[in-house]
Length: 196
Image (cartoon, rainbow, N blue to C red; front, side, top):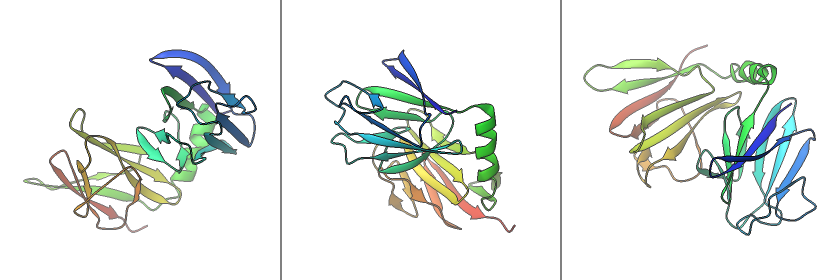
């Protein structure tokens, strides 16, 4: 059963199992997960669970819902993802069986790779649920693989530190398409979908 490990400033406060199909999170006492903090909206976010798959939906909260430091309106969650609500971190944990089921669903996505451009061109297959790129402390991006395809998100770095086809990537994850060009931390890469 999926669960959230809730912490603030590195100290774990509690762990919550996601036993319901819909779990509400917010400051008001009628929520399933109550976080009594003024930075958290009364009705902040909604977690959806379906056969071990978990997603989060922001309920137009004042301060936003973040997944791996990226503001989201709706996002599928994977094992190890960290939600940020106000000053609180909520780490997603799946059982090995749920993680395996998610991986099986994600493997249905068309195979893809990144071609690194430079003096020596090489290709890296995108086989993991999440692949990170860049240099910590400078700029970091992630490519998330799901059953429906691949998305690119800025994890760390200032505005404009991640570019997709010459355009800066903001707070929303971007869907990747065949031959898209990515620039991050001085590296130039090309996203390629491979024939099945």
